[in-house]
Length: 630
Image 1 (cartoon, one colour):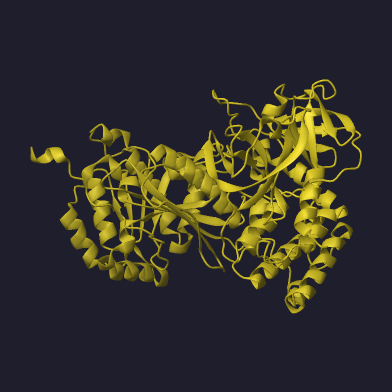
Image 2 (cartoon, rainbow, N blue to C red):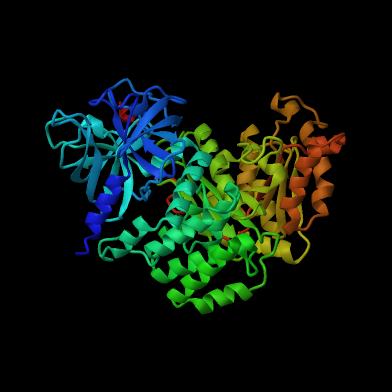
């Protein structure tokens, strides 16, 4: 009788090993482990407490083998529970031919079977299995354990595999018990915890795992016999999945930026994997998770394979080429595959686009900020890659998150990008262009076209008409600029009246940064509310006027004198690139005095044609202290 669940349970049990220091003499001591690749055992760190390079014995069937601990995660807990991830890897030299468990990083779903060893009958540790279910999760230390409920888990089971029957795969290894002599269960370490071993080590382990199953289809054949209703819904059959992953495991490892690009170019929704893809296997899983229809998954995989090997595959890619052809035929997508293979090669120069970083603060907590990061490719739909629901970050913490997200966003655009910071006027002098998300020898503002945009203006309909009128005038004809020196005594009313008389004014230049004095900020605010789309200033202080020294030849004046001829000769569309080059010339070898004066140039470049996400209100209700009425 065909019983795939019974066969799968037997095969998982055959992957179980016993681990100890002297298995023949200490019959009641030791723990468990599981074969995950040829000669490779996965177990818990607390089972091999000696740590790295410890020699242990591995018992499998009638064999007692010698192994050495090659990976071991430390314990940072002061309790009896070893801290997450509690993982160790043992390599066994000259291991006999043995089966390997099929692993999945998908969290456990419901019905589970745990394997291990127990000495309950007083005859030493013997293999056993117990049936249970997933009972939720438990955060401990830096990660999350899954809970095994509904049956007793004893200490000798630590390190043994836990089989998820709905997925037909091992989803983790048992870590600890919640109490002997009862059905309280225990905690298991999910397979996803392999990421804690490091990206390269995890990739090597999974590649060895995938190559084994590509050559040994026993586990795959059993999964293929399981009723479709028992497995997670996917158009990719078990045999197709295993063959694809085995072929991908033969290829050289792409760089992290390449992996991210594969996801970005082929994902139907633009959702990025979290945590980021560490190998091609992760890219496949991400693509399968990111679409909501079988046809979308099929096409996403075909696009990925085409991106990897092209229309004329090299020798090492022939297997993938044939896999894609058979897969497309099986799912009636051969016309789509032919179209992919006849399309012209993608340009070696990425089309680029814009990265938008939106930062807003809360009125009730003025020291906390909310962040949203979106990518706007030149010829594709925009995608939101990060978003806070509430203002939760302090500014210093926020800058680190921004830097991390920028690396992802810039990778999606192939490094050809303009970066815009959409922020309220209170943040205009924050040195966003000095961030270093990519390299320590250059800054964001020197590598990319970095500009500011006014957050509050995005949602103000009263400004819209003037804003678009000034921008369109600057694009079509010559445009006017207004230069405000440090000694300018122009009032806000006078400046507003002047701007109303000159609809062609598209740029305002300031000799001092907006935060240096209240009247400077007021003049900039007038310009923004009058629809002026471009403003420029020097973020460094005007030393002479910040200390209230009357000096007409101040650093602010020198900045305006130096930058004016450059900007007067630049078309409005070229301003971001011109300012980027100003920043580079200022720190280059033997810069001129004029170049030095333009160091730390800030460009507000607010193009009205593309509105930002504005996914939440700009401000929370204002905070009123209960003490105010007393």
